[in-house]
Length: 115
Image (tube, rainbow, N blue to C red):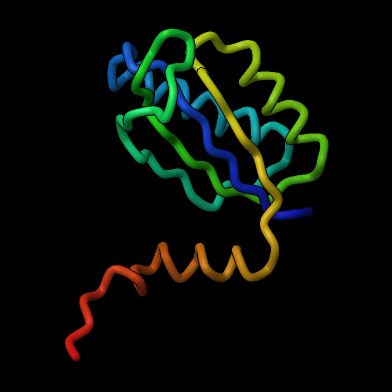
């Protein structure tokens, strides 16, 4: 199984409950495909670089997981079927990205260092 990271943008008109339900739905799709979800993050409402579907903002979400290749097809099919998803991108993580993400989750990069 390879390590993956997927970022997707949800429609900004969704309520908080609808947004959480959508994220849970995608996590469940991964779990049904024998994926191991390591982390989910809500990056919040952000301004888009250019309008997508006549919207200038969107809710950014990140899911980190390890899965077989078939799980990616199932996840991306579900993204395409869901009208609340404006854009998505799934990438394969190398060993350096995996270790970086683990360190970032532990908060090693958020500490203020005094010189």
